[in-house]
Length: 84
Image (cartoon, rainbow, N blue to C red):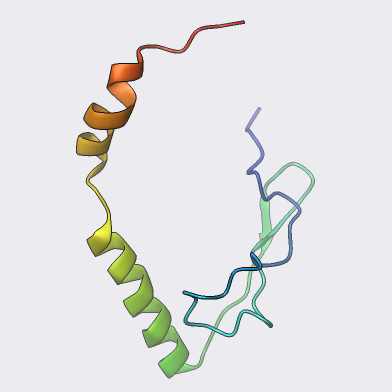
């Protein structure tokens, strides 16, 4: 069985809007059903808003760390998970 996302069933965006380039008072996360499966989402059509969001996401990507480097630095040294 698939694991539900932490936000399964959630319909509201996070409270923090400081870095969000879109109108978060009207923004909603995608809707998930009780099993955590995507049921619906919103589509934005305002070209300026879409461009602003795209720039924001690109800036997050550019500021990120490659996964292999992160894994080698932060995950691999912790060893394999232990049960129990």
